[in-house]
Structure formats: structure tokens, C-alpha cells
Amino acid sequence: MDMQISVFHTPELVPTEGLPDCAIAIDVLRATSTMATALANGAAAVHVHADLASLNTASDGWPAEKVVRGGERNGKQVEGFDFGNSPFYCTAENVGGKQVFMSTTNGTRTLQRIQACPTVLTAAFVNVGFVADFVRIQDFATVWLVGSGWQGSYSLEDTACAGALVALLGGAANDEAVAASALYTTWQQDLLGLLKKASHGQRLLNLNCLEDLKYCSEIDTVRAVPLQQEPGILIQGLK
Ligand code: 3SL
Figure 1 (cartoon, rainbow, N blue to C red):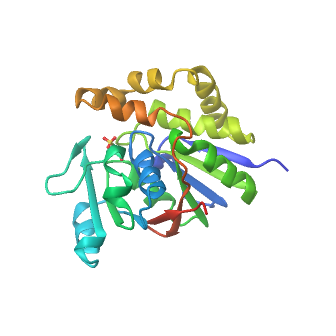
Figure 2 (cartoon, protein in one colour):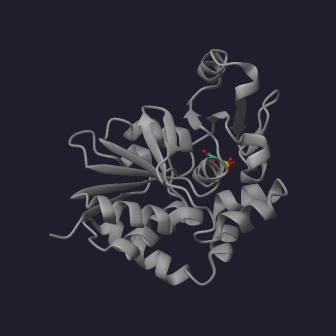
């Protein structure tokens, strides 16, 4: 039987009853692009916190030299944090062997919303093919793809990335999945153009983040499948 893949444009639209075998959080700009980069570059784990106070309390429980802290609000780095949410910070030199603690405006909320699912992954364009291969091998019967959007509204880039997964895996099970796949097909030759058109892309361009947009528009440049080990903690799912 075909895998049944449902797309939800934002975490708020995720059903409150019934869990799929696997749920995948998507925040192309930039949380899930950055998480994949950190794990591909040897981070021991990525710890995801919705609020900065709980991030600080949890990270204080680790030796300081083992911890890197990323904090972003409205696209900007939170004062006192090692980085905002740019994937360019997450080099092997900065994150190798480290516990990376992150709190971002929308991406971390999505992960919280799906954390009870038996398997939780994250995806972005930079690792979409690796995630699709992982899902195909596990042969899940039901999969949810959840866009992070921006403060409760739909975002073009997350739904397009969900569409890339539907295009790779087949099995669209709701209208949103069919629409997402069509959106991806329309833009697949110009993903940077799509990111520049997206409202959050424009917000980041105003913050001089063009290089981040270029990085986040590339397909399969980052060999990682972020996999929830326990609620709020992601590890590299690839050997
Ligand atoms: O909203 C989020 O979670 C972030 O990814 C937003 S930003 O790209 O870092 O501005």
C-alpha cells in the first residue's frame, strides 16, 4: 500500500487527535536548514527550546565548553547568544562534538507540536533527498509534513519543501499535499527565486541575509537526517 502523506501548512493546523508513524518539521528559513547543518558538521545533539529561559536553564546543566547557544527572534540574533539562526555559524569548528541549544521564532514551536509522534524528523531543501531516503527505507504507513510558517500563517518555502518530499515519495493523502507538490514542481528550477519572493525571505533580505537564502535554496548539500531522540533533542539519524 502507498504511504499516506499529509501536509499541514502550519503547526496550528495539525490535528489534535491521532498520530502518524512519522512527523517531519520543516522550517526552510532557517531553523531546519541550520539544524541539519549542525548535525552534519558533527554536533553531538541539537536541543530545541521554545523559550529562552528554558534554554538557558537546560544549557546551564552542561559544562560551558560543551555548549553552543543559538537564539533568534524576528530574524535577529538574541543578545548574549553565540549565534542567531544562520547555518553559516554551524561549522565543524564551532559545533563539532558540542551540544547545540536553539530557540527560534517558529521552527521550535513546530517540533513541540509533533513531539509525541513515534518518529520525528526535520527537513529542509538542503537535506530533502536524505530525509526522503530515510522515510522510504523505514516504510512508514502514515507521515505528516508540517510547515512552520510565520507566526501562525502559511509560508511559501515550507510548503514547497513539503511538496518536494511528496514529489519524491508519492502518496499525497490530503489536498494540501497535492497543492504542495504542484507548488514545488512550479518552482523547482528556481528555488532561490521562490525564497526571495517569500515574505520571510524578504524579511531576511532586509537583514542582509542573501547568502543564507542561497544556502537554504540548495538541494541535498547537507548529509543529515535530524531525528528526535527524545522530545526536544535531535541527533544525526544517518550512520
Ligand atoms: O522562525 C524560525 O524558527 C526561524 O527559522 C526564523 S529565522 O529564519 O531565523 O529568522
